[in-house]
Length: 417
Ligand SMILES: [Zn+2]
Image 1 (cartoon, rainbow, N blue to C red):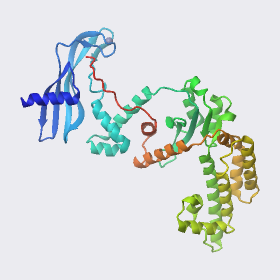
Image 2: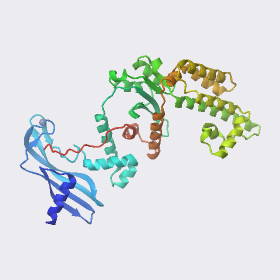
Image 3: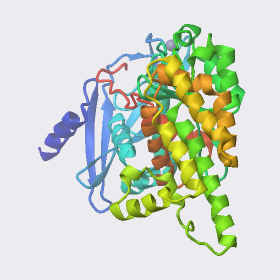
Image 4: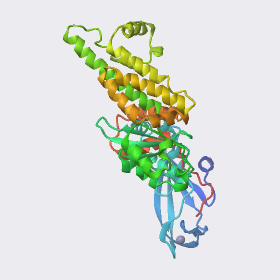
């Protein structure tokens, strides 16, 4: 009687429906495992999983799937799954309603792994759910493949392109963002022109032709790729605020390190250890730092002048008209190129050459704010995983977390058997 109730309970919990039924529940308390044997009504006529045509039973194979734990007990479903012989498709295993073909985990268990992967690293999930690293990685891989297959290709309007390194060594991938929908579209090998071109080649032309802006760094490989695939690139390529600020920041830093060395050679250590002061936004400094910084900034250091140029640039992004934006930036560029600060003159040259795209970014309001937060997420993933061993895994992780994909397997409540 008790056994009967167990079977009903498990059938309900597992959503096992006719013609499948729970044959037996085997609780092995000492090995902390529950095995649920599932049977299939012998009267049921079977269908080919490929074409649905009813056909004869060929044989059956015993299969097991890891399922959600019952209390603290590891729970496994076991069933003799019939194979059919279809005239057209040959010998095929029929589908079971609780798992996807080929998976050793039930759909509910895979969903649990996916939910945990959203919160923790692959190795942490493996430890917690008592799985191997490869099993967990397999769930992520299948989830991404499932999500990409379900994702419908949509017309693109605003996209962003950026490189990101995936190891301590200088190995890069190119991330393509749909900035309008705040999601990652694709992660491409390398950062060369042909890498980005792969994305354009594989996207339907009618979805590319709607693109209004492409945000990116002033990077010839990306510029050339866009020029080959998008009409009127001179009006659509946008060099975004984030990357322009990065170039200016590098210039300031170079001025600082040269000046620090110069002063040090005559015994003056005033600038030693000030690197981060010149990089941080003063509004975010604590009062103590701020006071120190204000003192340095008002002195006659070269780095203070370079910093002032960077600050002016920070305020030149809110123009509405092309003409005013153009004039304001040209004025800054003249200041920089007339200064005696070598690194800033170098940056000025880069900015002058790419001014057209900076102006595009301003008037098209192609900010990469969403892109930046996604990028921060990618950096956090990298840190959590202690780097990725290869591009494939890095791609999966980015698409899993930032691709806005429907990752979970669908539970089929009806059986095709
Ligand atoms: Zn068939």
